[in-house]
Length: 258
Image (tube, rainbow, N blue to C red; front, side, top):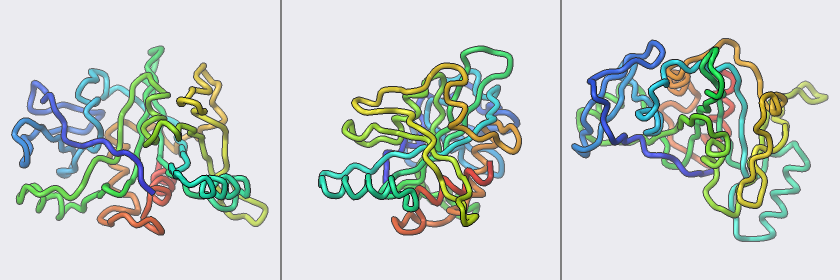
């Protein structure tokens, strides 16, 4: 199950050699691959796996994330029969179908209006979350085995949802939350649309209009805390496989931890 994934190579270096993201000291280093690219490293030499927008945000360290969800999109297929089967699988509700899932956290800056932000974490075919020893080895040899798995979006819910989409023909994004069925088993249920076709129209944007689509976190998390969760997910040190180690497994692992 694949989707687009932003590069973790970050342009436009920070003016100083280090910054602070809510308790996480970020060290800026020249890329071992390209001299015009910088890399951010946080606690215990862990890469800050976010897109370049973190460099453009002056308020990144002030965000507090309090709610979580899983967002889903049907994987694009040109075969109409495939699409019909996928729709039936969704209606049955016991099978997620051919979908791409992402973990999403919602946050804001306390006591400031219009500061909503989204942390969108995805695990794709090209994604790899390195172990500590692998990170050290990769930096020493100048060989990258991993790519970005998360994006940080300020004040643009539609943009955050479009990060899941790989084609203009599949821009229907919806929210999922876990619920127990009659047998006591946990299932991820459809909680309504985020974007609707055509062209990814945003459905709910007003304050509180999407409260049913979010679950409250066990405790408030900073951007740095969310980055740390990536390194404790079930897929650290594992390569992507469509059947097992995939986007849905990663999204569920992040949701459980947050």
